[in-house]
Length: 338
Image (tube, rainbow, N blue to C red; front, side, top):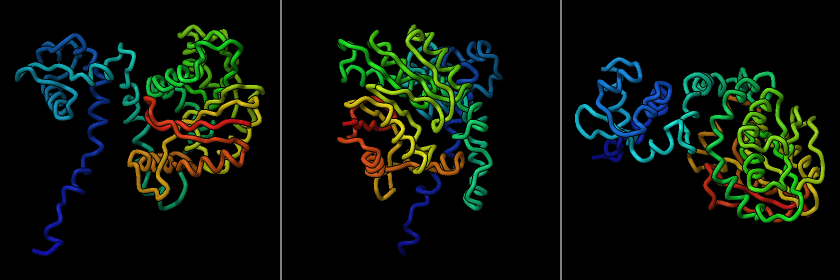
């Protein structure tokens, strides 16, 4: 048998329905299926009545979710949740991630359906990193991704010993979004004062979340694009949470220089980013995210640690290092202003 005949098409075919799992999860989140199963397994007829769905439709969806190992089947006509679904897909749980999937069909996939044209023409019809196109997108999106970086932000604050700080701590949160970094650091110490920078529409969300966590009285809100917003000066920390990938190399380098100027001597910049290896062959999630930037921005991409470290050095930072042992969906880069 030739090598060609021995090749397994499964390597290709396994991607033929790769769009299905997030859409299945989205449907279950929107229909409150995971919430309805939060207290334990339920009979299919009872569950369909509770969530207001067609019995056949719900049965087929639940069986698919069982195949994804998100739903259990104690018997033929009853369904429950796996441990992961119970922890991350029930809306009342603190680590709820289901909100992310609520945007799959309405905000994420429509852009991806234009991928062929974007690759051919080299441009996207809409740019989420520009206020005119992106403000409405992020106003809806950022609150639902708050839990993604929350554990890492809290753990970083512990690592830095913020709870024991003896003096005031100023935090600059660039592209604050949900405020997950500044809110979390402020919760760890009453000494923390935060300046949140983002578009006005998004800062409404930041303010609401800061109020919910009881720290809004220690926040200053600085609206505007990164290139024109007032960053202030003398900050001990500046956080840049998943921003560089949307900005591209030129704007990212300008942003890092502006952050450098806003920090006090000895201050640290804390960057979370989807990093690729230098050859751009992995990891796969970061490579896919680069395509996401292709369909959503003009200059966006994902970058390697050496690339970002070079930008940090050019801006004046020293001692750039990776932190990979915190619970975060992507690595954390920290560098210091000497």
